[in-house]
Length: 395
Image (cartoon, rainbow, N blue to C red):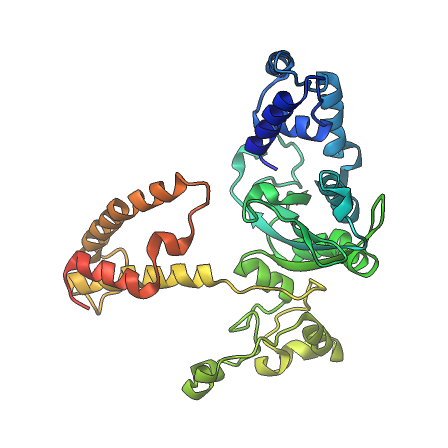
């Protein structure tokens, strides 16, 4: 659903029926939020549309419906040794979101049991000093936060027909927050969050499904929304060379093995089994290759899908920048980024890149689709050729 579709429906209803068809509360609430209007503007819009033979629900009805949508009465305070955040039950929120989605679908297509595909994850954020000014509790730091949320990726009926998918699946507006904690992004805080709010809930959801008004829904959850730091915390594989395979340091430098590829064989179940075989003190004394490079017991009970091609791509891009800078100034043996002999070419390079790439970024942002990394930079070889041409050093 988007504001353009809602406005189109308004016009179609107004032109097709002279008996004052009424837009649903759900779509009226969406229109209210997407246009970012207040009570006065909403009432003006309602009067205008009445002249076009379309009736919007009354403001009080829409306001009450919006309050029900966000489930304010079910948001609760999360306590550790002190109040440290707010959250809502994962099962309740997911059920509510799915019910709202299917209420706008054709009843003829709702063949139960439905299949709901969900992805979730969490991340930390720091340096929010502005919030600290309003906090008097010395135990509670609002400089750092942890947010856990999920996204409904698709709803499929019993005949394997896709009934619904988000229009912009990578948009942050598709994510529904489950918990927000004023805690640092570390092993202790993440373990508290997962053990107290998430692990049991996700296990129950996948085992029992969702009980909807007119039937049941099976749920499959993929845990994939996080960066490399959070992946290591969740999986316990802080000392691993890779988050999705168990290759050793020697293996990833063996050309014959590299050419054959590495199997994606790292699982949470195997990691937990290895950790449970001995006590923690003995476990951590074992050679790293015998304990799957684990630094602590996995916190998540679900496998961690952590393939970060974008992170690797950006690191490659940065490496090209550094290499070109040193080639240009002839300082191959001097790798200090603060060296004056390197700063000049580096600043020149960044200025040229900004000049050449800003147009592409602006061009793609003017379209409906969000810009993708490959649209901005091309592949790694293309980047290398651009940089080499800028400095005329040849390829």
